[in-house]
Length: 223
Image 1 (tube, rainbow, N blue to C red):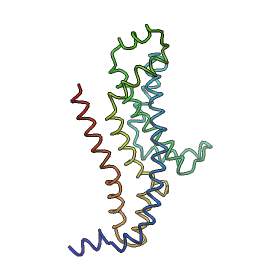
Image 2: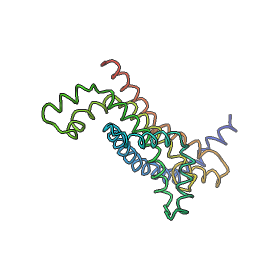
Image 3: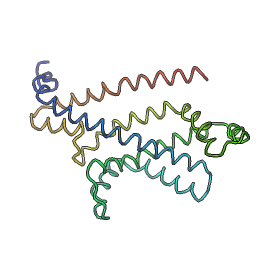
Image 4: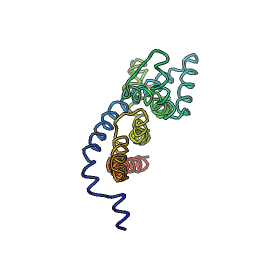
């Protein structure tokens, strides 16, 4: 037991490595605050454009969503960071992660929003248009509020996955939480910083998961 604590829960090593973990956590939070709204907005735009039902617009959107949902995010990140310079686009690690995550997450958010929009009866649109609302106003004030409410648990669940996905940013040397924990581990030859990083993720995401579960139960009870 003492050996387990010494190797995985070493308080002295945790105290020494804690400033590095805090710096990594700050970058993880900053990255999340940047990529979540970006992917959320792009996904909403994708869903709205898909709902216009122009065949020449729908097929590129379907390809975009299917392609980036199937494409491994790690490979996508590596391609954006290491491959784009060959096309004359040189991005720093932060914006490389932002672009790769936007492409990946917007496809998931877009599919969630699309399902939400299609869950609203067509009569809602017809009734709104009959009152004189334009198509944009109908979507903005009538359809989207109901659609978002219907898929809110899925949106929150996908956002949780985005937070966990930020850990792969370490492959392009972005100093987020996991990378700083690995650096601390290498400096001290002890995995305690990695265990601490995992616990930090748990502390951050556990309340979100519990809130998500309560939301799902309330929505099911209200139907």
